Amino acid sequence: MYVLENALRRRGFTLVAGADEAGRGACAGPLVVAAAILPDGARGQIAGLTDSKLLTERAREDIYAQVVDRAVAHAIVVISPAEVDRLGVGASNLSGMRRALARLDPMPAYALTDGFPVPGLPVPGLGVWKGDRVAACVAAASVLAKVTRDRIMTELEQNHPGYGFAEHKGYGTAAHTHALRTLGPCPQHRLSYANVVEAVSGNPRVAQAAN
Image (cartoon, rainbow, N blue to C red; front, side, top):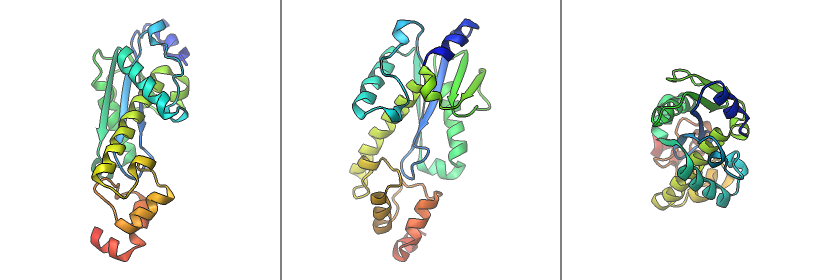
């Protein structure tokens, strides 16, 4: 989990940042991107740190608190559903990673991003396949993004009851699809997503109201 960061530090890149997102595949709620720099040595080694999707909610919350406490720097960017619809999820993700990394203070010397390289970074970078499972700084970013987004979705349940946001976190479950067909979309739905369009079009009354 620390091999990549340690190799980069040996090459002179003292501060190595990781960046990851949460909510890319959801059809409602924001896309959240986080970046983090963990310190070298024992303080940067967090027990149980891995891809946020492999952790229980309790473990994520515990690791989130440790990352916030121990990180040299961290940053979180929340991208609205409207921006995702306007730019597309891919472009929104790239923009979010650039913005999150740019907000780090101090600025890293090198950036590791989950899955693919991010053009336009102010520092050298590398896209790492399943980076949240092989690079500690990327895993830390994944936990920051996931916990932040889950908290937002739980709050959105209060503002938009009936969709079950607190349960499925905006992903396209059967219950969510049923709610969409019954209630129609709310401002937190990504209207550019095919499953939202399909669910809305399946109810002529809802489709007419959405247009």
